[in-house]
Image (cartoon, rainbow, N blue to C red; front, top):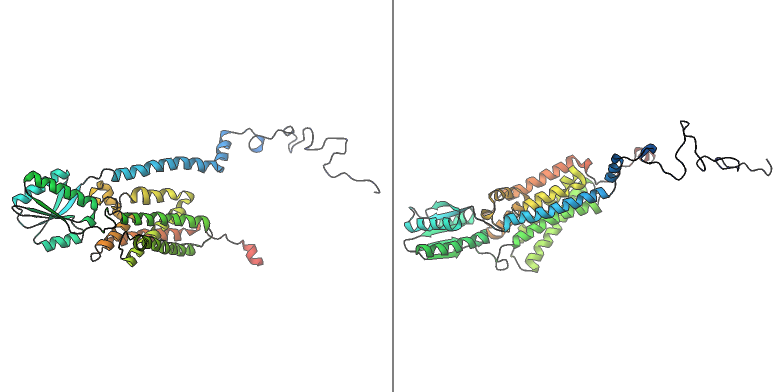
Length: 388
């Protein structure tokens, strides 16, 4: 009691082995554990297997990094391939054309035949009794050119605003055919592009910016504002779209003067595009988590942008892309913006419906399965709430 110290439990008193500090130690079944300094292999001391190694690899950061290496390489090839396939060698397929006057004159028949041969395609002819009716069809973008043929001259009206590549192709082919059949051809651009955008690419670029910045903004919200509630996420996405679209339109119109935009309408179209693109990513993020970028990139960039008709008009696109592009957000954005800038009195509801359906479906999916979205505020434990 006085002066004696009881050694701590488990300590060596100098006369025997201490469990875990010296030789073999009995286990729960009476056997011996591994020798000191030799860690057991695998779970429960058994040798490590290939399944254990694979499981450890899947749980490590090396697994998603390795998968991303292959995904990014495939995405790079698909990106280059999709744009090259759509834009490198645009070839006309079926070009709607208006013909004024009935019946067709021999000169007109010879000219149309020569044009189809020169273009290696067919002109889809729409006959109109008057030039005014044909002009109206051109304003409504139902045709790309107007053909008026007399006995000694051919008049060919094109619309650069409907597609600079198509107008240039028609003009070059018309002059060539006129020389071949010995008839002078007068080519006139009745709907030219704006001086600051002679190739007609500015509308494509601003729509492309809205699409990409839309889903990039949604990604950044998921990373840096992860705890937003579903309603807050949607509201901040709306704000991101409005501010971003205003910046795009202001720089292109007021800053650079490249386009003379109907500012309010163009701003809202760009905002609608950014919001839709952002919600498409949010929808996929809800459904498949961290791999949401894959289908978003595929729909919006690999497929949507090359088929949008912004860089190459749809009559020159591969026929399948020309049809698909109108049903995707990038194509709808380009069509709405193009009509707003150049054909303000002939608006179409269809591109707005396409954007609206994509946005509505994306929001509905996100809201219905919002509990699966990786963001949101952590729920407070029930006992903590009760004590509070």
